[in-house]
Length: 335
Image (cartoon, rainbow, N blue to C red):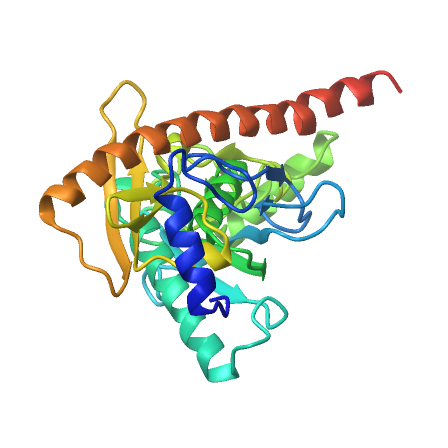
């Protein structure tokens, strides 16, 4: 939180109630700062994204910047921590450079708060991808989602969920094929050797993937960084933070604006295709109190803002898919 004086807070609060409302950077109450997004920034991850809110185009720096990456690991369900259908674990790390005013203990507490909010919302069963299983009752995927907050210039929660959604959208799950090793008897081995000596070719392998009664292990037909997208990737939510001061609320607060309002109202929305929107989570931050009637109005307003943000984010993610995949194929074909 930025260190602001009482006079500065009073100035920001009075400007919010002016007619028309005023903000230090000239934005309206519902305007976001510049949002920059790029996917595929980490070549060793299964999915990654880098997002910046509020970067100064002239100076080339500043803003809230978050790096998100996913990594898939194989878990054993019988003897390990794996669960049927796979699982998701979220972790948020705050760079000390982003919070130089905080001690290490305070930084750990902040990381824990961010991790708790992100993990509780994204690991909800209604959002669970259906293609994280490998072998029923034997092996599954563990999806690690790691976020690093590189800089904080306000509106961190919205930036975290945008970066997380972009990284999960970019994630590719390797396609697997079940195999079973069948050991031959001595007689079968001798017959196979005789047949291989009579007929040119390679002797049959002990790994037979045809008509497998019980799968014992799996193999990857493609490279580890290829595969299919997470099922239900359209369901990953976006978060909208409404900064509330009395009857006024505004979006995308800077650090000084966050320090000047008593309450922040966080709402996470999911937008299933051809279905009504779903409220995934609601959370309040700050010492201010919100009346139930006011909360209902804020949820309705947040749904409108979240839908606009969801539409813009999906358009950008599809542009990123075209930039990284289709254009790369054309460039390779023209070599």
